[in-house]
Image 1: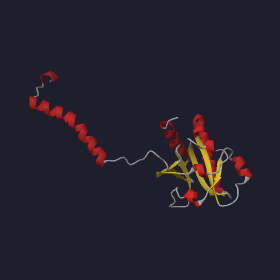
Image 2: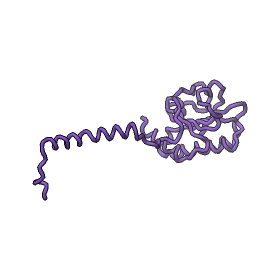
Image 3: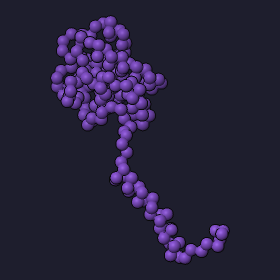
Image 4: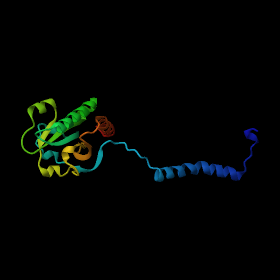
Length: 185
């Protein structure tokens, strides 16, 4: 039996044509509403965007922060092991950006009195730091202590994402690479 000898009536031809056209639409509807994807494409926790008053901060080089993506940590001047790990992670992430590293800066918001240890500042050279008051910190989400997170601010200085202090650097790097690829500059 060959294909030429099979005769379909006009009614079957119309039904076959409708099935070919309508079936993909029905499948897409079912997949969208009843089978949503389980995974997500980001590794941090998305936050509602809120502006952080960066101009009110006293930093060494304020022009270095404007228009850049900022990795921000909040800690006291007496930086413990967890704080040092966050500083290390921020440095590694920025270094991993390669030729786009100039679009990412690091900022340490120091709480309380005192200045960071000079050896620590030297070890994490290029890190900006500024003393902050409680009203500046109100912008950052705080269901847990702010020192437990690394915050990501967009070039307009709006907080948009946060990572736990023990975050996998590869996940942070992937997120930041994607953001740098899709943002202008």
